Image (cartoon, rainbow, N blue to C red; front, side, top):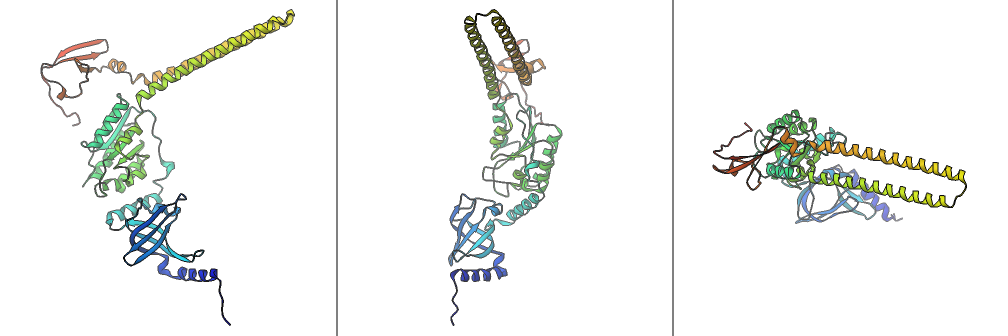
Amino acid sequence: MKNIFSVGQINRYVKNMFTQDFILQKIYVKGEVSNCKYHTSGHIYFSLKDETGVLSCVMFAGHRRGLAFRMKDGDRVVVGGAVDVYERDGRYQLYAKEISLEGAGALYERFLALKTELEEMGMFAQEYKQPIPAFIHRLGVVTAPTGAAVQDIRNISLRRDPYLQIILYPALVQGEGAADSIVRGIHMLDQAEVDVIIVGRGGGSIEDLWAFNEEKVARAIFECRTPIISAVGHETDFTIADFVADLRAPTPSAAAELAVADFRQILQNIAGLRDRMQKAMQRRAELGRAQLMQYQMRFQYLNPEAKLRDNRQRLADLDELLRRAMKNRIAEERHMLGIYLERYRGLSPLYKLNQGYSFVSDREGNGIISTKQVHSGDLLEISVTDGVIEAEVRSSRKEDWNK
């Protein structure tokens, strides 16, 4: 008698064969990516091909942390996972759990290993992230003293807040001793009690950025009491420092924008709050007047003297309540305004002058911040707290105040 099986039985039998094969349960396959599709569910469907054939693959959303880059068609990769049968369609495919670029080298493998180790230790956990203060007075920067990164941070920070104090630790960011230099910079600025620290540099290869993948740098960032913004590389470059830091910025310029509040926007917000307070007070007064007029019209039709007295008394009580409420509201708003004004009093140029500082400019009003801007015989204006002093430049000399 013939044995007749259903399609489902055959598929299930073949699936069991795949499941029992030890080699297929943990296998690494290399090839070129094709038909790569990122599904809205978070799953990634793609194929691996070489000159001999094509293999269907899928990486489920739960395993996406095993992919450290955005995969695209044409990438040559090594995929680790298990080969199994999709029972419904009766076809086999590779279920990927980790994907790495072929030929990424030992550094990339060390990066993935350290990333996994630190993540398991909880150093990337969100609950350990410190909030970035909304308003800061002192900004610490750990980066190379030359290059685009430090200039971008300085220019954007001072443009957003001209009264900000920036403390730069000139660190090595590449090559031998770079990791130790970065760690020393973090420790020094943490002890200097700055409000926020930016640790970063420009982009580069994995070799160029390797100092920010060292475990000692990651631990220094994790143990730092001061909130740290990581600004290493460009938007597509991730380092261990990015995962440990309290906030990751794609570029040094973006880090400066995230750390420093826009002083002009703050002043606009204060002006807006003042206008809202005045309009609210005006509306409240107009409402009180309208109610008062309604009561007056109602009283004209109410003749009995007793009721008239009661209504007058009630009107007086309402008027007193309204005045008291207005007085309390005005007092509250004045108190809040006083808080805002006191908070930003320290940002006032006049306040800085009263502390013994002065502002030096040329005859056109341009600020003098470098000896390169002046020459012998130039006339300068020195603004102090009670007026302006005119001076003539006899000579100038350059000093390195960072020594």
